[in-house]
Image (cartoon, rainbow, N blue to C red; front, side, top):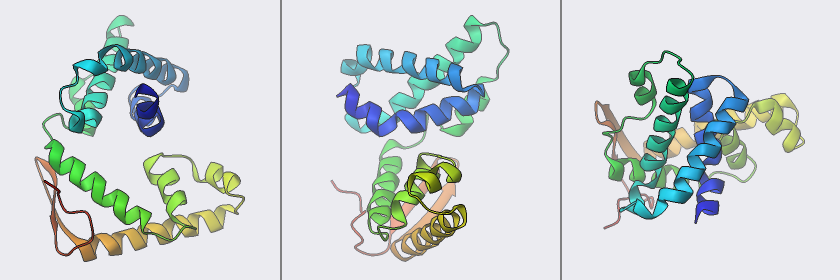
Length: 180
């Protein structure tokens, strides 16, 4: 189970940690600590639907531990600003499910580039090299995928953003409705 979690979340958790510590090696060390804690404490997670929120909380705590153990001043509010702890998990899960469905519906020559760039936050130069494309072709395909995803989202759902985070209301049967 931990291996699946690693494959699904390690890059976005690393990016989150890196945005808070600004050092690749430290971020990787913290991520390793996070996954040790995940391995040890996963059985205590009562609701599997809250896995992502729980992982980010473990990351926040590990980042705070890093700052405290190294006597570095930090502002916990800055850490929590990235992903609100109080965010409605079912709304976040629904939004994530909808995005995944709509991204999977994008053309095969653009969807993986969008995922790599915007979700995994891989540099576009690295993506270009990985897919054997020019940088301008890579940028163009990512921009096209963003536009296509935006159009699909607007056709499928209405979004409202408030202090609780994004609220999604589906307009049609696109497959992303909340399932009970």
